[in-house]
Amino acid sequence: MNTLQTLADNKLVRYLILILISIAGVAGYMAAEVLFSMEKTLIDVNGLYQVTDAEYATLAGSYSLLVVFGGVLILGGLFIDKCGLRISGIVSSLILVVGAGLVAYSMFDLRILMEQGVDIPVIHFLGTQVRKPILYGILGFALFGAGSEIIGVVQTKVLSKWFDGKELAIALAVQIAISRVGIGLTYGLTPYIVSLYNGNVSVPMMITVGFLILGLLLYLAYCICDRKLDNQFKAIGKAEVMTEEAFNWSDLKSIVRSAPFWAVCIICCFFYGSVKMFDKYSTGFMSSQLGIAQASEGLFTMTSCLTIAVVTPLLGILVHKKGRSLDFLIAGSLLATIDFILLDWVQLSQPLFYCVYVLNGLSFSFIAAALWPLVPRILDLAVQGTGFAVVFLFQNIMFLIVPKFVEAIGINEPHFVLVFAILALISTAVSLIFKMTDRKRNWGLNLPEPQEEVAQAS
Image (cartoon, rainbow, N blue to C red; front, side, top):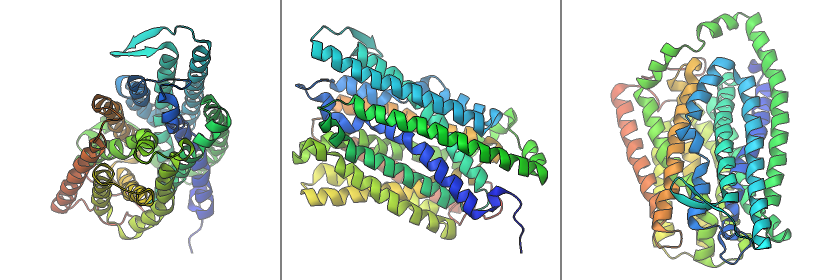
């Protein structure tokens, strides 16, 4: 009979940590999407905000500005590996609160100026003309994106630490499921809240700021458990192992030289650039396709998110027990491609639109359950923070580019959804090549995850 040595060896405790971290993180996902769940309210030419297509595209891409051009993710990943999870999580949580607060203020300021009918100064920003309050929102989202991506790395590495050699695939799947519940509720409920407050988009944004503050408090509670775990590691001699495996600059070569790691980066870049960025345009798309009431637009995206919440943990269990991660990457990418082609080419009734959004959720679930557990299998613990940061950096490069493609085509133009279909198709092709290469080089990444030690592939 095995004796429990640390908190991480206690299944109940580590799953409580999973729930705590997931709830703390879900506020960030909600705050990232809340503004875009009100797309029609923002761009209504007769409305209170009258956000132009160019301003909306810049807002949608601004999340990734500091991440891509400021090198925030790489520096953040190094900061995590050098300074630890507790300090990194607290700092990034504070950045989230400040960034989201600035976005909320920008929308409040824009509404006031529009109601007063005054001339609003126009500023040139990265080749786009934006009104001054919108610029505040862009800067706020850029700051928020920096904090959000860093804390995303923190949360993933927290789960790698607590579930190392255990049910890591299941843990990551549950964390993703909880996050999508938050996003789904954001898209489903925010339009109703806006209607209750006469179209004031600042109200739901301030609600998410409150959730972010709650998330910070929950993370502080986690830090107490994390400190106790570190003390237990030290008591049983694991601290010496951790010191030997601590971050070293020379370890970065394991990232640069890892072919499977770069495959993960590319798949993440194109798939999430497709499926996640479509969320920014989904409410307006559904309104134009079906002519439904504004308050009901987000219900389709909520359907997709709730599908993800139910299915992803089940697929995570399958990955944990049976493997097949690379098969799941192919299936998820292919389903997304089919999903966007159906949305663009086929005339669908409202019930069939719900079915297609369920398909969208299934595609996301396959990728989410399979992709993220691969990184801890590929990279050593000491460089996982930097590794996840690199993956998120590639993802954010696409987040910055996609809105510009959509803007160039035009949100109201036919076939703009094909942008997302093409990205998903590229993800499918790379996933197929990944599986064939895995079989040829015997990486073993399509097998079940090891239960006691992390396998290395390079």
